[in-house]
Image (cartoon, rainbow, N blue to C red):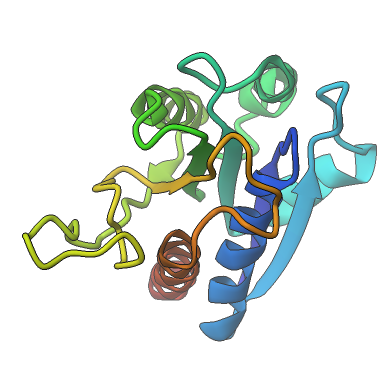
Length: 189
């Protein structure tokens, strides 16, 4: 099975927990995973570009700040123009996740920017594939309580430590997404 690369930025440590949960899901499906951290300057290591090129699928991750991904993720996205020009990510599976302090916080804008990035690279986007928990009986820790469909949505209260947020239901949703992504990658290979 091909490797899944998870490339993400985390400003305060909350989004790294989502990345780790997605990675756990990938591993639970029997796939290999590589976590690539976008640093505080918006850069990844030179070797990470090779990892992304060789991966069967790439999952993008970022917090949502002011209605979109922060500049560090955008700098990474802009730097991907070299693999874009050479079509290095063409036909790879792609996916994404985001986290913010608000329940909504315009997380959809962040995911849509990731979909656009993946589409420009000629990638195939993997949706969440989980119905939202939106009945009267639903509780905050139910899977997909935030009602995403494009990718994983997670929420961490602004005054929470990374150990306190995101909540377990959001992390369970992230693990399920990682498993789904790896399963689909196995089917496409």
